Length: 275
Image 1 (cartoon, rainbow, N blue to C red):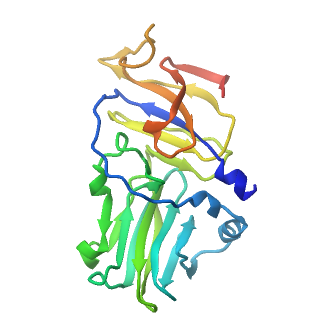
Image 2: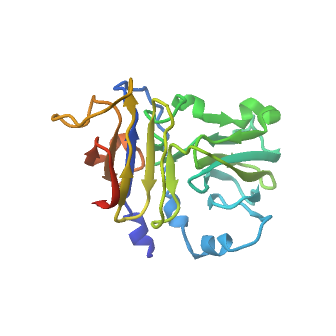
Image 3: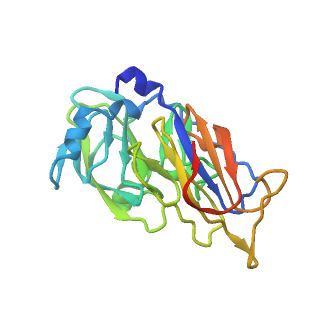
């Protein structure tokens, strides 16, 4: 896959809404220009084939999909750095600070974000994440090592950092834990089978695929209200309860994507739907 093609990769997102509300949120905007998809390279694939435990240097712009220990040491002032973490769909990510040597008073920072930010857009979106945007940032310069381990709410997380003084830096460990009921997911690969279950929760869940794909939905079971199966409305799926919406676009935020189709009736069997 060429770099130019990767830049044009679009998102197909399966958006499961459980008794969806229509509230809107005041958002903070992160002016980040990082493109992590350029980091899905042959080097990353070779790393995936390695044995654990895994250790290596952390780059100023990086993507990590392995458990292991990663060390960043500045060789010159590094002002705009980010590392994107991604696990399997059924995993949480924990970032643990082993050692940190940065000058917070001199303008350095090290922040964990619960999710991904790409060119001002967030995943999960503000409508989908359980925390307000401001609470999704954990700033080392505010908490220090009192909050040494930070766990994501889904299979992606990221850090922003600035280290001005050569020789300064940090070491962190990435580990993953099982997530029995994953809600918001970014898929690492364009192929595979995945089941998304939202057990007795009134929340929005999204499954995002980075690559152009063909999607087959073979089974769809929707929720019940007071023991009654929700039925399809002639006006569409909005306002009737649980439904699945398929969205597409070139960005990251589900709330800014274009609706392609919606489903608000259950079915079962192979070959029911291809997109």
